[in-house]
Image (cartoon, rainbow, N blue to C red; front, side, top):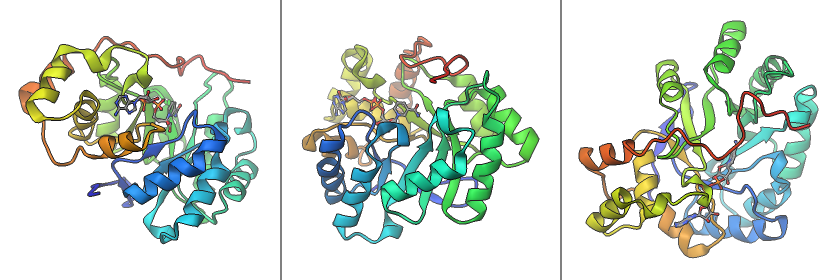
Length: 275
Ligand code: NAD
């Protein structure tokens, strides 16, 4: 597989496409991650909340692939915001690694007011070298702005729900201006919509001899976004990665841009407090 790197604002590279393992059962995770690594994936997105870090780590260890060639992301869960260092150590233990490539605050929980303190701890963790890069997830503009204003450290990424039905233009523009890379979660709208049957997407798929999922993923990567579509099927691992050998035209991109309904399927980041 030929997967390009995106350069983060700290100078580090991240493979633009990876595998996300949200809702992959622990019992299935090791097989799936092993298959993905065998297929050429080199970027795995997990979280302590997914309860499969240990299985991700086992697949990495069993692969025999040089640790430096695999990009591993994990995340600080909401209830751990008051204890980021301990939670980070626990994640490393479960993964069986001595560092991760990217560590994220999973949700801003603005009503709790704990994210800024957690961010200060992530900065220290990055300084210790045990997280090569640090960032956030589900942060809106005001949440990003607070971290930047208070610490001067700009997150390397914001991992947000983003797909053609929910394009987050204002937030994406802010991220571009601040050099924060956007990671699109739910890049295919999590199978919760008719996105892959929309005529604009089907037409582009037919024109390029690709599948609708490949067209949507290509739309993301042509805008420099990072994606890690989830699948538990081997043939789809290959399908989802085969998006670097064609290009959507400006007209095809514009037709997909026009599908924005500002309709997300996940929780509202301003209100989500899972505890
Ligand atoms: P997704 O958009 O990747 O959708 C996954 C679903 O799409 C699969 O279950 C499958 O039904 C379908 N699919 C996958 N490949 C397909 C193909 N080629 N053709 C047709 N259908 C296909 O949604 P997701 O899994 O929620 O998001 C991807 C990753 O993002 C997650 O695994 C996780 O790592 C991350 N994520 C992060 C957050 C967060 O709060 N930070 C939230 C959700 C997901």
